[in-house]
Amino acid sequence: QVTLKESGPGILQPSQTLSLTCTFSGFSLSTYGMGVGWIRQPSGKGLEWLANIWWDDDKYYNPSLKNRLTISKDTSNNQAFLKITNVDTADTATYYCARISRGSVFDYWGQGVMVTVSS
Amino acid sequence: DVVLTQTPSTLSATIGQSVSISCRSSQSLLDSAGNTYLYWYLQRPGQSPQLLIYLVSNLGSGVPNRFSGSGSGTDFTLKISGVEAEDLGVYYCMQATHAPYTFGAGTKLELK
Image (cartoon, rainbow over all chains, first blue to last red; front, side, top):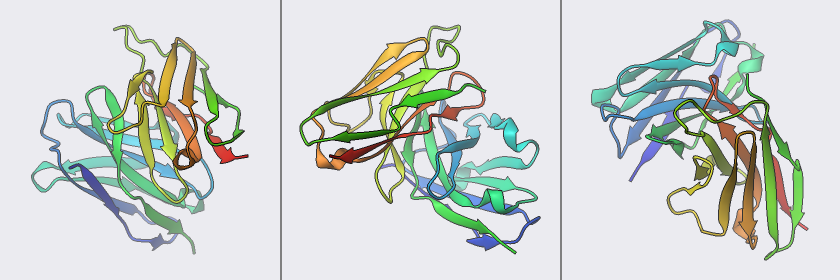
């Protein structure tokens, strides 16, 4: 059974760094073809892809967030991480992590974690 | 970036009615290896998105066969053959052929 769960700070101030953790089970990020992606959704709005990390540590980022994103993983503890630097109110959203398997992108999603950026 | 245009933005249906959602891409989603990375997701109210269709026409795990996907190149369609109450929510198409991945704006399916 595949499960993913996001965790994060809940609220942070502008200019701080947002650190998110995705803890998963039912698959391994050391398995060929596997990956984890991060997607966010402002309240009442659509979905925005942020970044992916793959079993071989390959990483892809959405260039719209320029150099603010860093994705990483801890294979032995079944976790993936996303950092967003210099946040502002536009980063307020629900953040999801989701599994990528060969041919099937985002086939399992976490429940999401709400993040509010406010002074 | 690839722009995905979904129509309609809102769809009103009765239980048992068959409906279709269109997703048009600003460029072809066929890659050089012959793959088309077009996906459909449903987000029910208050829930995370769930995968319905992958690679244009393949049913996700546990997805009822009243859902079907079709299309090629730049034009894609999701069809629901006989809407059920549990199908209500927002449907998104997404492409993963071209970086960055992009989503359509969504189609809200509601009861008439």
